[in-house]
Image 1 (cartoon, rainbow, N blue to C red):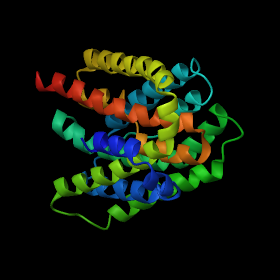
Image 2 (spheres, helix red, strand yellow; image 1 turned 30 degrees about the horizontal axis):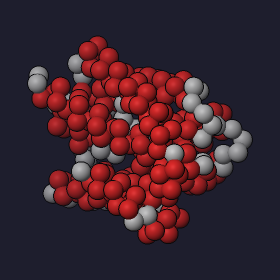
Image 3 (cartoon, one colour; image 1 turned 90 degrees about the vertical axis):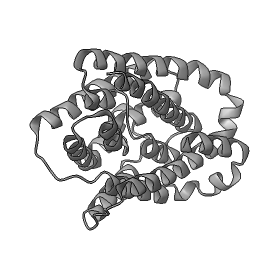
Image 4 (spheres, one colour; image 1 turned 45 degrees about the horizontal axis):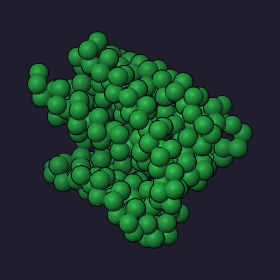
Length: 270
């Protein structure tokens, strides 16, 4: 609901979002911080949990998205690749709680992914997107958006984790508003093209997630198979990609919300 309201406001009143585009990392970092507070768990070293995350979020989802991106035109292609490189969404822990997954494993993999991203994202972006990518800028984005909030979160252990999660969603919606507002004119002028690209993207992610659902019947594997941190990818894309790249990431983030609803209904029927 928050993302839907943010998208509507960005299309109708884009001005404040365009003005705030240079500060988008601030609400993103705050969103990650409160998400970690809302999902904080005790550590449990689990090789099986780490393997699940690596296999389904990186070796399956990332690879599928990167292959899919090669069939897209320039601009859109780089946006999908940028989304594919980022770690799981900050809300993954909250969702696995609702779906009956292994919460501690997901929390640990989330933190491990943040640490891995400092190296993985800039190196992979240079290899896949090209020499025009500012690797140093990407490293600073990852440190500010993930590493610093994660480190600060260890100093707090709030009792009302639901409230922390709600605050995180509000700041994530603010990030989404800024990204959509920045791309509003491009989206308005190119909505037919975006529809053409987003429908097959949604179909691929739906089929992939459903295949994993049928194969594993594991909530964590399904979440990993379609969900990346779209807010962080969109924020980074504002600095290094054309408007088309930011726009497709914003659309993919909205698709993620729809997929969460679809797969949530499947788990409720179990």
